[in-house]
Length: 363
Length: 97
Figure 1: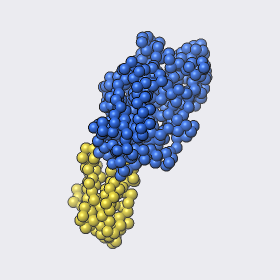
Figure 2: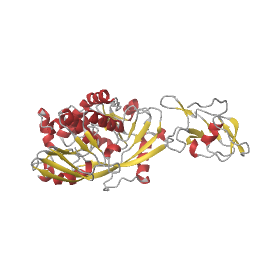
Figure 3: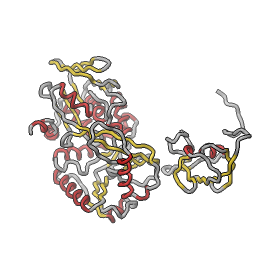
Figure 4: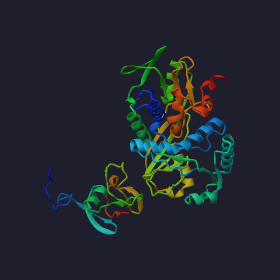
């Protein structure tokens, strides 16, 4: 397993459960690590408006999350703070509201009605979140959304992965991979490692590594910046893509999106924009102290959907990439790992096939 | 290791330090010049600084370097100020919450 972030650690758990002996080669602390900078949403609404498989896959992951969180708690003692209390996406203009309503309808159509949502006007939103301002035109609400503490999730996954016997080697950036008929030789800065099966889960680095084993996985970084506040009195029962509140009272505020390459610096201009948008929704937060800010790079494919790729040239090599390593974790630990392990995944095989990287070269 | 028993306060200042007058929760208090609000309140034994808005537990300065945000107090009617990052000034009004 190349990569020990949310995706790699989750797959390592699933493969260890499928009786594989797993070694995880992780990158360094200063690498681009989306798993240490993300927002922690278990998010369904809006996903897959143009892709039925993605809408269905996301929905199934959301439904599988309670069991996954319970297993992690039982096995590791780490409570990842899963709360599936629903999610809200606030709209500040009529046109935002209209396009959001269209998007929600499309996701519902793609899932044959499995995706549940409501479009709420200001008064109805106020019944859920009394603190919102008059500037909120309305919102979409889905009872299937939620959030976790993403750092606790990463800790739980690493604990469980090692409990299941996976060997974890940090700070081993991969320099080269040689494929042979018998397997793979993976060369890192510190040594050489051999394996029969190779899974690439190294985020943005996957493009380069996949090429070495005959796969084409186009990816690009997308920067998001976040603000972290002092602990605030608990008021935000329902998370949104702009703000969530942790069990400890901290407010985590996002969400910016910038296509600016490998740049994970923060900028006052973007942070101010994030804060200003939030204050339009929740004016009562005007005096809350911001303690930290950071930026991280999302891992995006050209169409934003996951890549689950098996090499045609070297069929024991796989590449896995997705934007939503948190949301999809519950499916990655089970179904996707079983697919990589060569087990039957029944009804899900069709969905997994849809996420082959072939779709980028067939055009 | 055994620590000696003492009735002395945890903090004390040299007797020749210049003092200034501030108000802590409306009560006139003499504190050393040129110290942080956090140090002044600790010397005045004005502890806890605040109660957690999440679980109402008592809080006091922890890191004393502007990171933990446990020392927040109201200074001159401005809520949420970092006591450890602000120096005392004569006449300053500090309120705990």
